[in-house]
Every structure is written in C-alpha cells, then in structure tokens.
Image (cartoon, rainbow, N blue to C red; front, side, top):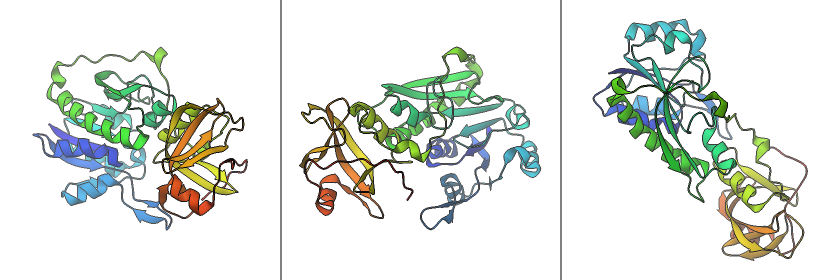
Length: 317
C-alpha cells in the first residue's frame, strides 16, 4: 500500500522502520517542527525527522496541520491508500482522516478505551496497573475514540519505568501494525465502549514532587511513571534531588517520620514512607550534576541515618 506516515518521537521509529523495509511504500512523512531542547535550548529535530533524512524519505513539518493548506494539498495529491499515525502530537483534520480508501489508523500505547490521551504509558504505571497494551484503531474526529482494529495485551514488569515500557510497546506496536495492514480487508472494526473510557492527559512537572506521607508503593509508581520525563523530585537541605530509580521494600520501620532516612548502604537509601514501609532510593540526580548511585551521592551530601527528605517549596531547574 501507499502510505503517508505521521509521527514525531522515538516511539514512532519502530513502526516507521518496519514500514520502510516492508512491501509498502512510504510516500511522505509528516512530523512536528524542530523545537528548542536541552539546557541551551538549541533547535533540535524530532527523531522521526532524523530518521527520514538518514533514509532519504520525503518529509514535511507543518506547524499546524489543520491550517496548512499547502500540506493538505500535497497529501491529497499523493492519493495514499492509508494514513498511519504513531504519536504525531497534533489532531488531524477530517479532510485527511477520511479521504484515503482505508482511512487513517493510529497505533496507541494502551488498551483502549482505557487511557485515551497524550500520556497513556505514564498513567498506566502511575495508577499501578499490572497490564497495558497496544491498540490499533481507526481515527475519527474525536480523541482516541475510533473503532478498534486490533489489540495486544502486555504485562507491566514490576520495576519497569515509563521509558522502558514505552520502548517495549513501540516494538510490539510495530509488529501489530504490520499484522493489521496485512489483513486489513478481513478485519471488522469494533466500536469502543465509551462508558469504560479513562483518560491520560499531559503531565505537568509539578506533579513529580514526592510526598513522603504517601505509601511506598505509590511513591514507587510515581518514580517509574515519570522516568525519564518529567522526573520525580524531593528536597534535601533545600537542594532539589531528582530520584531516577528505586524500589519499595517489604520491610517496615519503627520510625514514625515519613521522609526520614533510616538506613544507608551501597544498595541505596532506605526512606520511611507514610504507610510505615520503606522505599529504597537506588539512583538520583543532584542539581547540575550527572545521575549517580544514591549511596555515592550520600557521601557528597554527608547524609546520615536520621536525616530527612522533604521541602514545601517547589523550585524549577
């Protein structure tokens, strides 16, 4: 089939690569414009653009696809058989969704109708789900509400963070996309049950602040869900500390002060949580420094058992 591909981040690359080396033809790639990134705010191309340039694929980067007449005209003139969307980041207008013979399909990283929206992987971990998956569905004019073509359920591993899970789902989604395209004429779309819908809106940086009154399991879900972005944080002596990896422990503590560091070892820093259980910080990142083992950081910070994490004031990087 002749395909126009819409996608932007690294999670879109496995599907794009599968299409590139298949019997299908990629006529055009549509991705987001270059954006400032990093501490220097240097203009940076999205991963899909870098891939397209490397492989000599035609590419456009409309600022707003819904209002870009030249982009819409180009897409219509190419007359694709189908449009494939993987984490593009903009809502497609009806004149794109409906005009190809097979319409437009989306690879979404959840088991729809659960977790409609921009951050399905993070919210699944944040809510303590034991499973998630990939759904390929027909786009319509409403967000993630189109009829389902195929689905694959995937277990969430106990220590898996959002970045790791998304990479796994992206690979699984690419395989499922190829299976779906191969049998698309035989698939009977299934309408979603909108009464079962849940949502996964964008995540704000401030949501990453740890409250040590929470249970250890909830803190663990937060750390995993917000890794790699936007990150979770706490404070030690007014310095913001980003926690990048840890595990909840089955051990209880006789200490009654949530946030108190009760043990320091090469395995990490064991911190008392609101339910009396311990959370072990294994890796962290201090302000303006590289990520490191929590134990190594404790030496530089001169942390001792009985010290505590926690600070009411939120400070930006």
